[in-house]
Length: 138
Image 1 (cartoon, rainbow, N blue to C red):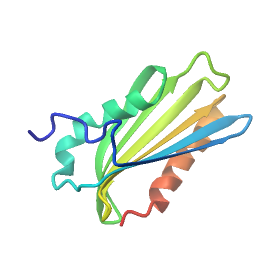
Image 2 (tube, one colour):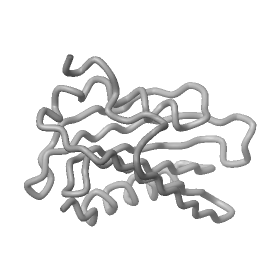
Image 3 (cartoon, one colour):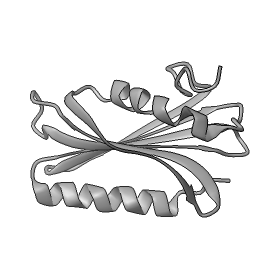
Image 4 (tube, rainbow, N blue to C red):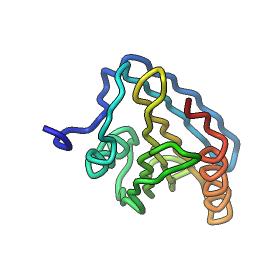
């Protein structure tokens, strides 16, 4: 049945994770590929927030947006959220998840950004925008 389960689970066919950090912020980028494409991507839009929230170990998660968009001719699901991690030095964060079809299969990119203050939060928003603009979706 379409739209009843999230597209991605922990058993994706391919998964790549990369971390970057500084004293003021940290970034985690995770790419997952399932070796199958999905024709009715928009039907799964409502279920795509749950995998994003489950992959960040946090409290007070709240979805900011859950959108179906066309970016450079490619249909994508774009989910963003804010969260808190009180036991960490960089205790506030934002995460973005973008889901789209490629020739390799259904692809999900998750970017999470932890920060200390509001100026770092704005830098994270710019980072998300840059990643979406530069992402190759073939």
